[in-house]
Length: 264
Image (cartoon, rainbow, N blue to C red):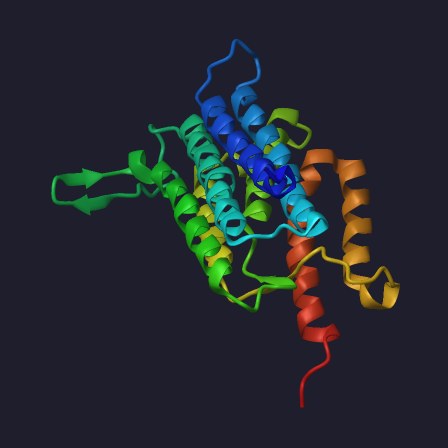
């Protein structure tokens, strides 16, 4: 048996296992003074899964054992780890921070008319489940889109998952109370969910961290992004992640609109 060809798929399965363990971790109630302890454990598993997600593709290229089943398995694993798991993190954040005695927007109660009557803010946390739905759409589009060989169209699911995973870490640190109040607010979380669902499937070109060479002239944007991101993380730790994701989107727009030569 050729063990070599199974190494990338094994790493992909490790990614999937991290996602399953993360889902279990979310609903574990630990005896801790940190209310975000369980969500932090789920976030750590997302970060670990990202390493496996990088290694499976790297191993497949290095060992020259790419296969159609590997591509499909990768998408299935990503749908769980970078779709379902981050969606449940947002769900739990809304559930933990919503105050049902007060309207989400001051002075305005959200009310939805249904065949069985009126439903208010109680169901808004289920908007978080749009994240796995749109993540699945994103992954399906990626598998059939031949334009995404050297870059991405729309925010990649691991990028979105890392951004969401940073929220429990930032809230647990509590370094910036004003920022914590924003991140933990259900109205912000609902608006954030809707925005990221759109960006997952938007026709937004984003660069990938793939280096055909290591020349500065060919990789100005990538080297700049990595350098600035490292400095931000050193000084701000977890709080830097949303800034890094925002920087990634801005630099991608700059690269595609200003730096790439236009076809005549």
